[in-house]
Image (cartoon, rainbow, N blue to C red):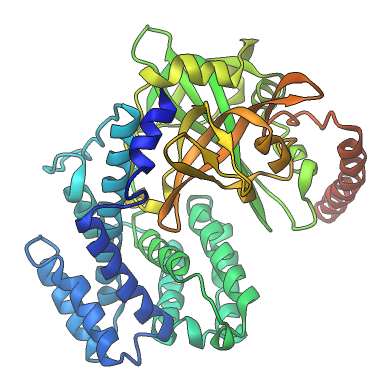
Length: 493
């Protein structure tokens, strides 16, 4: 049945986003091109693109502010306030495209989604463009009450991002990238700002790896503009350090669908997608929970599972494919469980494909926070069956092709492109990438040596079961033990 639903989404003009969304993406392309060459030297067509972005909001509460910002930038007067306003307009426009795409996906899947609740005292209702514009407005208005050291650090972030925008990606050199090092170090020292620190650290690393950028043939234009925009809005006073939204507490049974591994040189995050069956018998909920650990770039592959060892219950549930009983776990409006290992225990066996088959259809999907509404962040769990795998690795659903993003398969698990190609059923995350829908596998059912097996990305959470992988882990674990010992020696001095 799901194959038929996805065929309706993918078929015909497959990847089409609708006329309004196409026009919005064209406005984003124009503004992003201006960032490539730098706002300090805007040619006529790029000046027109900046003005067009502002003009799209003429009839909204952001209209006057964006028009003023665009006029100032085009005339060469580029202040922090003007850049923040334009970043707010860009994220609102991107959010509108996100909502159009997610609505079409929810419609195809028959999936119900919660609405984003307004903040206390906010007269706006949740959802739609109002939510994006509210987020953009609040990000553009600095909050009072920041401590001076935090204000100084955030001011340093905004100053560096302003230099990037003025210079443009083509003008970035090692000196400009290195100017962020001190700011990133200060961000990492403040727990409330580590979310921004990891974002900025990864962004700077990508720019550094691409230098000299001026001679590069191809640039990840949309990605760098997304990162710049998100960093600038998160660096506004009060966005990360203000009063957090209240979180509900939930109890019940957590049925794991799979784990998505996010990794870069200095950090790794294990994001678990699951269905929560509330203890009070309420509607099942689609939820995520994430655990994160700092790392160095020499710790890779199966050794990554050594890092979150304090979350033993979660790791055991992933490795043994069991459900988890949780009690009084904080649940954010975004559908994210704030994981506490001491409030959970491993329970009965739970196959991820059976969970997806039985529980996904009736689960309520979470609302998406306004600042997270970007097309690239769509990652919706689905179960796909009844497909044929083509030579290029795509799934033929009998009327439309669904591209499989095998590059997202983590190196710390047993799930490989070869197993995906041999599969007959797949639990994965539907994403919007490069103008088309793709599927990132989390678990598959495949035939190996004439035997049906289920393989998931989290199967090696307690260590690899494959002998070759176990030997590789032993070598990597030695490196990790040496690093821990050296760190301990330094701390004892």
